[in-house]
Length: 73
Image 1 (cartoon, rainbow, N blue to C red):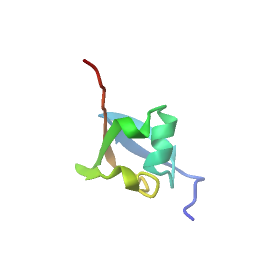
Image 2 (cartoon, one colour):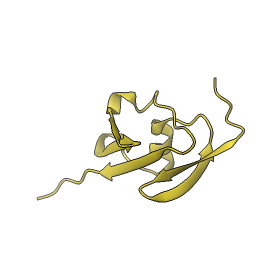
Image 3 (cartoon, helix red, strand yellow):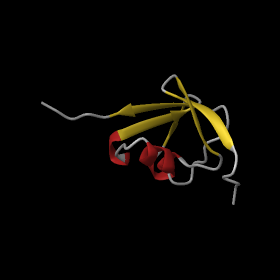
Image 4 (cartoon, helix red, strand yellow):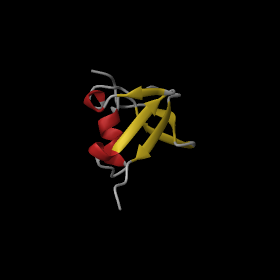
């Protein structure tokens, strides 16, 4: 299991963010109070499947883009 003692810096939607090492996309989604079924995520310009959010580890320097899907009519 990766160490969570050290912090890493990533970029989320263009803004820098520090978080503990070893975090997953699911943990980031929770931290940001987002609903997993309503987001699409790219990490370093690669789309990540929702089924992989819980296992996809975030690395230092990752550039993450999160798009919130909104319904309406």
